[in-house]
Length: 203
View (cartoon, rainbow, N blue to C red):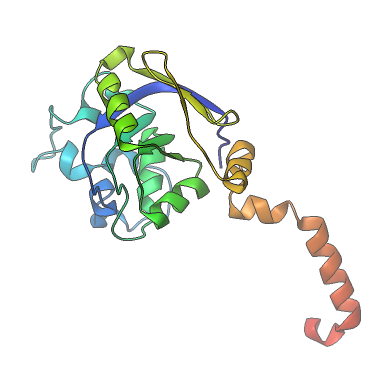
């Protein structure tokens, strides 16, 4: 996965609570196992009308937020089913960080495993950032993962925390497979010893 070190981009405000994974990526788009192409269906029922036309009132259909790389939203974001397509859709759209007062646990971990940084902040701080994000083109935010600090559109420094293991994986672009491959030498050595000690397992 792509490493996450620092990110500077436009922040889009989505003042909604309990946004579930079916709202993020509806069930009819779960047939694919590819991680690309899902961005066009992100928030499908909110972004498009019944005829497939863009809803001009939805934030991600409006300039400059249609190129947002940061999403600021309400509590319990990512609740519902455990579909990994939800972070895939966000990532394919271009969202690399989501800021909320709370997240559903499975969605939170799926974000980390796919290179998206979920940031938990107090509700009052999220509300303040959301108001700043409403400034539009001026709502550019910088997130520094190594320093665990973001700079808001008005220049305020806001601290956040990430557990050390997740931080290490994000900074180095390590998903579960890549993390396993860092132990390849140890795995090979174990298998070599096992072939000698228990040869019948390999016949």
